[in-house]
Image (cartoon, rainbow, N blue to C red; front, side, top):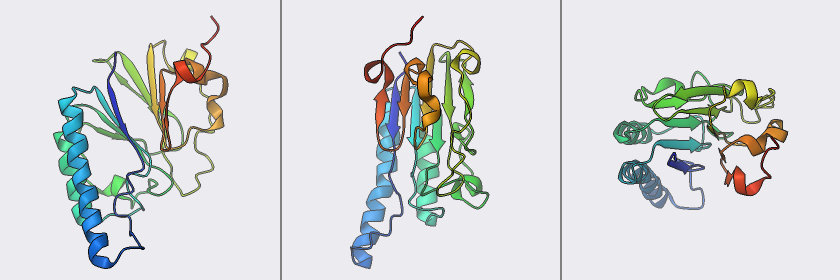
Length: 195
């Protein structure tokens, strides 16, 4: 069994407009501390993967302190990390996802097209896609065929910010779908595939 820690919608560097400047600054510091807690949780629980699926940041930019905290925390994680930028922190060549020197264990999904990363040590393939604009009309528009795209790997996991219509009939063949708003174990949520 593959153990996954999934976090989403952290919205780091949120402006906290309803708070005064000092309280908003304290709240952003607390958010940064959450990154260390996530890293510790992944390592303590001996997780196999960490998914950060959508809106890790509140916008396409980040305070320097947040970038430093993010890199430090992810550098402590001993497993592969997959980030799927969302509609608030979408990927661009000027986004923190392009500009920061992420550790080697981090994979960022940089396009709205499904792509996969095979992890031989787990015998699994991780699929994902990311936003490249706030609305990203092209997100997950491609046809997904697990019979050919999954190469018959048993466990398929997909971190995305929004699971779109394109999964359709294939959703019940995925082991788990992680997204920004909720995580759905597909075996419980949908009927099993007919053989």
